[in-house]
Image: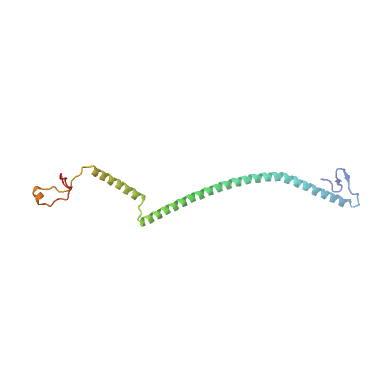
Amino acid sequence: MSDPKTTTAGATGTTTGAPGTGGKFQDELLDSARRVWLAGLGALATAGEEGARAFSRLVERGKDVEHKSRDSAGQGFEKAKEAAKSTWSDLGNTLDETLTATLHRLGVPTRDEIRTLTQRVEELSGKIEQLRSRPAVSTQPLSTPSAGADAPASKGPRKASGGGA
């Protein structure tokens, strides 16, 4: 710092103000203005340096926040997705149970009941086919000689009698 009594102005190296002519006030005013100017330049330089560092710190902080937000949003999405799956599954089960109960009240058989009935029908059809393939057994009672003369004519198949009708 310079001596407050004699101040140099600019690069010329000359002193301003003569003794006793109020030069002291002018010197102080110029010195004060110069100091304000230098303080402003210093603030600008500091702001430039600190601003660049502050900007870099803010960018890094923003990256961290963005990464955490994405992770958090991803976790939230997965939780919501699982909750939705569970809700749809529960809704489907409830709908199935309600529909099945309604169909039972209306007398509509279930798939398992139909499957069981189908198997039973197939078994019975097989037995019927077995019975059809056996030789026919007469269901008429065998006639005895004494009963044959007194008995009315049977309604069984007639034998062709050589010259008739």
